[in-house]
Image (cartoon, rainbow, N blue to C red; front, side, top):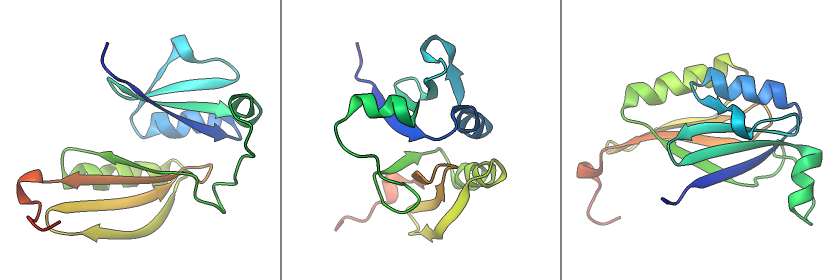
Length: 136
């Protein structure tokens, strides 16, 4: 079995959160979705588990942070072109997300940043690995 990544995020309103990620173009795996949580398919081996806050709390002894005020994690996702970065950002804003930081263009890497409807921090980027500077 290949390694899979499951990013677990606490959400206030599961239906709104699912709608947000579906509007970005990601599907929902119904097999792992119920009233407590939903599995969003980012890629073949990458998933976002949207968990209602009370259910999320059953997985940790720590207090939940308010992602609109504190940084819990910064999730970056790569896409295949600069145009896809722009398209993902447009979808995120249209779906209710927030344009969070100024776009960055390093020539070899291009990125934009948004917050989802719960305040989780996402960066979408395109990187031309053949152009990465030697002295990074």
